[in-house]
Image 1 (tube, rainbow, N blue to C red):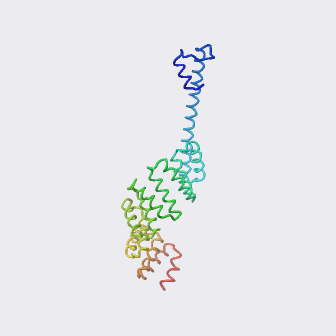
Image 2: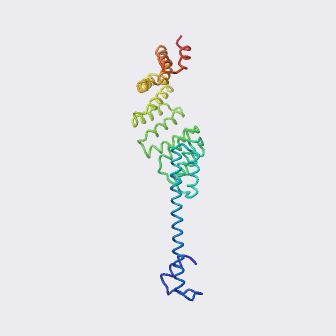
Image 3: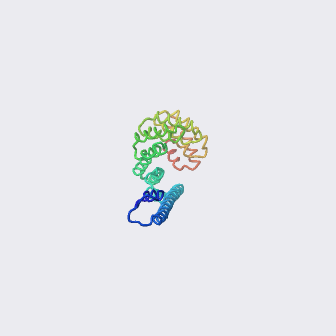
Length: 265
């Protein structure tokens, strides 16, 4: 006997039911049964929802604490409980990305986007995994969509610059790094990477200007001096290069002395 039909009958006690002599007792019985069933369904639904939320929260905590394998298992369980939970696919993709499983990460980010196509972070992270597989064109297309959804995020421009540089578009990469720097002026790695693209474009003067900024911000970083030395040598400034290698060696870069022996004596 269907639960809906029983409840309908109990509203209309006069409706005839064959094979039962006592309508009153049947209605009392069925009403109690219906209430027990409804209560059980509600409790199961609440318990499932709580378990889903708890597993998702635990997975996020594990992801934050860099327990990527444990986080992945939690997100697996969330997806079994609710295959339409886009955040479980998204965060499982992040776990796989950190573990170096870029094909698996791309698949999960794509599943998350099938459910929620308005998530720029899913496009951004899928683009990062595509970069990891050297699919520069596919990565750039993902970063394009991410930027169209959230144009004020410096990370999106930064990673699109990597895709463009991988494709040999060094000026395009420089333009994206300019955009990233406008949004976040404090991030020195953008300036350093812009210098790298200037070097690839063979604009050594602009590269040295950027590396001057890096040295100014990081005066105790031997790597900054060594990088500038390389560019100065490429630009024909042998004396300046040797002085920078000397400073890098003074700050602890042992390899700088090999460069000095090779280029400065």
